[in-house]
Length: 80
Image 1: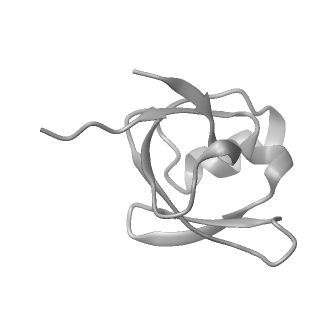
Image 2: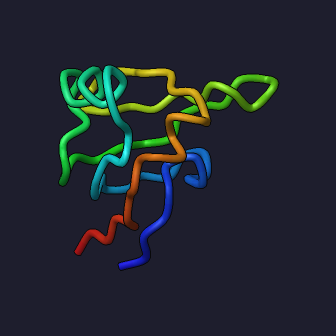
Image 3: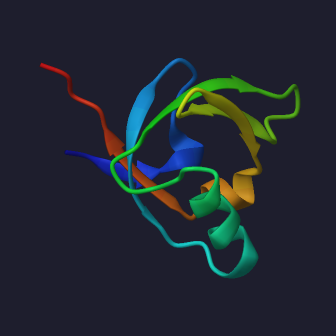
């Protein structure tokens, strides 16, 4: 499967979280809110200035800044 960063995911697309390269408190916060490898993430909406972007994860909408999304590695979701 193709790997890329979360900030490259187009609107209305769903991907699978592969890994976090974030460090420090942002990494802990992402893990606490459910950013665990294997979790589905849907890109829902971008703000008018393209930052932050709104994502749906585990039924919750979360806004993430582009700088933080660049350190979240995802892969394409292929459903059978």
